[in-house]
Length: 248
Image 1 (tube, one colour):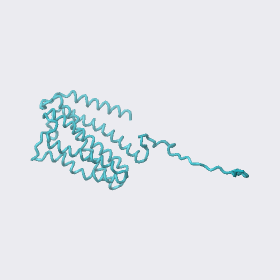
Image 2 (cartoon, rainbow, N blue to C red):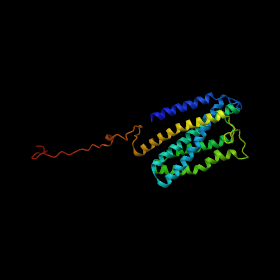
Image 3 (tube, helix red, strand yellow):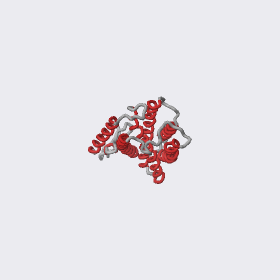
Image 4 (tube, helix red, strand yellow):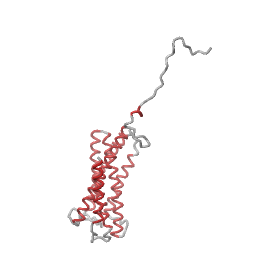
């Protein structure tokens, strides 16, 4: 485990270093700030992967009603929400430096903002159900129902012929990215995905512990504390022969 943590740290550091060493992109208004794409693009990709994963896990839960799957689904939903926010924030910064405006009502911005609000709303909706079964069922249904609209807003709507957007849609699919930038982008995607995978596993572990009652309201783990389950009961002492409790 320690080896993999060190390896992950070194890989993330190497990918980050490459992002700063990459030559300035000549086609960008702010060539130096164009490096934000090494966070923006992987975040958008991870958002898509997470929302697909949440829907797949939701289908499995609806078939099995296994609450352990809800812990996995909750982790995927939270990751989708978190990276959608990161994607929006980095996109807004990029818009300001590249096109001079924080917000342009660009179709790409609007469509992804809707996706972000979908999954932030799902996180809020989960907290409205104190019962684990009802929370899991509602979340699963919501995650499955959101999949097609979310994928449409991310991948289809911005590419419709009648939609005019400042956002480049075909740079990656058509291989229009500089080779150095392409390799650096791939390595940063792998690095961010690696970190996300670790966060996902930790969040699932916490969810399973919560399900088992192993975490108290202060966040302390008592799952391995055998003494915490001991119950002390009063024991009645038998009376000695000939003894009396009557007062004279």
